[in-house]
Figure 1 (cartoon, one colour):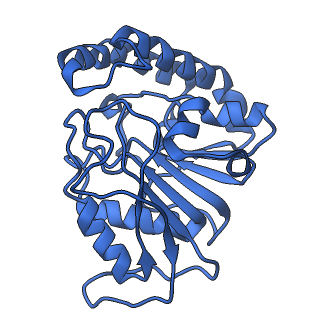
Figure 2 (tube, one colour):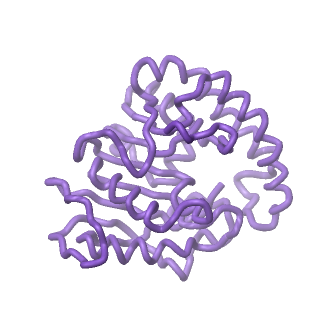
Figure 3 (cartoon, rainbow, N blue to C red):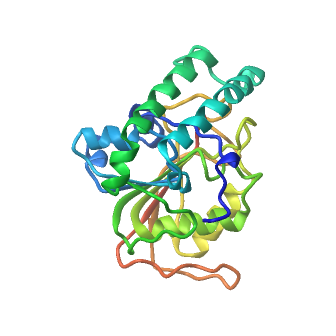
Length: 263
């Protein structure tokens, strides 16, 4: 993790309510033991903690201090807002009315994270872990979430990185949910989605894509290139000669790929 630089990060945190919409989380889901991968400055952890639930958030950004993360948020915030204004036509401005409205929502979530970060770090709720290698036991968690990282930055991370990251999430959790399937600011389904699905099938997983209610990026719903629909559940492994599969856990993990917008 020594090569990880804060100057290369654009922190952008989402709220507990957005997580519920993004991942179709039920009250029963929220009471499970959850790991949030590439969580960044999201307020999901602190809001879950305040509700009496348990989340472990993983991100290499947690190696930095609260002040350093806050400074980076201040530096990058206007850049993100400018990008949203430039690409205004690529988003659905319905529940969120404008880039400024979105900015206020995101800053509210990030400020909750910043207020909680030192305490949460001491309590072990924020952990400096980096995909695709997580220092947790097989099936340690009930659910693993990854929001706006995998597939979103397909231009920066390889196909193999995506596949190994999802397989690692399957190793540590029984239920894995990844959102969205679109590349950042493009409205296009990542070219990695279908190869990842095919590789997961070769490793013995059954894959479907499920639509969610959360809509912000145009073309995020009913994406023909990816399809619609459901769960990835474990079945007896049928290995492929050209796919390196991690050893399947004894329990039956599930992956849910959410076919909807980035925001």
